[in-house]
Length: 112
Image (cartoon, rainbow, N blue to C red; front, side, top):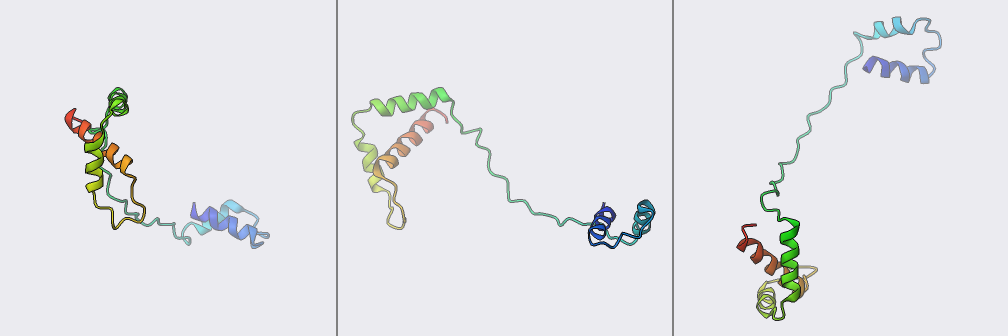
C-alpha cells in the first residue's frame, strides 16, 4: 500500500512520465518503501456502565408526576440552599437543586 501511495505521489510530481511498466516499477519499490506504522493510541479508561442505575421511562414519569403534584417542596429547597455553591462560577438555581435532591432520594428509595 505504501508503494502505491509513493507511486501516486511521484506520478503527480511528474516523475513517472518515462515509466513504461507501472507494475514493474511497483515491484522495484516493494523492498525500498517502508510500510506505514501506526502509533499505538492509548484509549481513555472506560466509563462506568450506566445501565445498572438507569430507571424505566414509567418510573421517571411517576417521579415527575409526584414532584409536579407536590405542594410543599420546602424540605428540598432547604437542602438545596444548604449546598455550598460559593466557588461555582454559575450557581445552580435552588429550584433545580431541590428537584435533583428529590430525584436522587426517589431513585434510592426505589432501588434505582
